[in-house]
Image 1 (cartoon, one colour):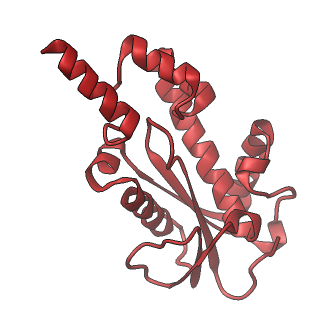
Image 2 (cartoon, one colour):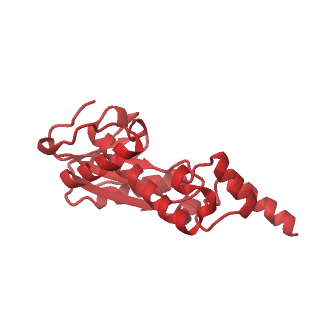
Length: 199
């Protein structure tokens, strides 16, 4: 995995494109080579407890910005555009302006105030993108755990809003919540079923 050298380089990644509920969260991270935490890797490869620890270490040693797009925005503009919006907000939330931005994937926001490059599987290639993936993942997991306190049926503290069997069973038993993405096919289909049943 490479560490970017030369200018202020921000790695950007998101968490939460696929779930049936909750916001999509993006993070932008500019690492300090002199205060680099050990063990930064793609968040999907890092156990949850280790991710939590790395989140604190990264937040304490790097420049970090976080951006979100709400369920309402996801349903209004679609998940891709909402993800790009969250990325833009994360970059804008950085305490310092980066010279370059590296974005995980193959799509980038339409207008950014600096040079930008997309990197497919960037969280496995770039340390700053991997750090951003950890910040985004932990931030979103915490949001879903908090939402689960008011909506305990769905198991969001365990499944983060993804369409697991547990989540699907709860949907069939108690229906949808205000935090479900109505534009996503399983939720849209369930809403239509409920509508037909009530008519």
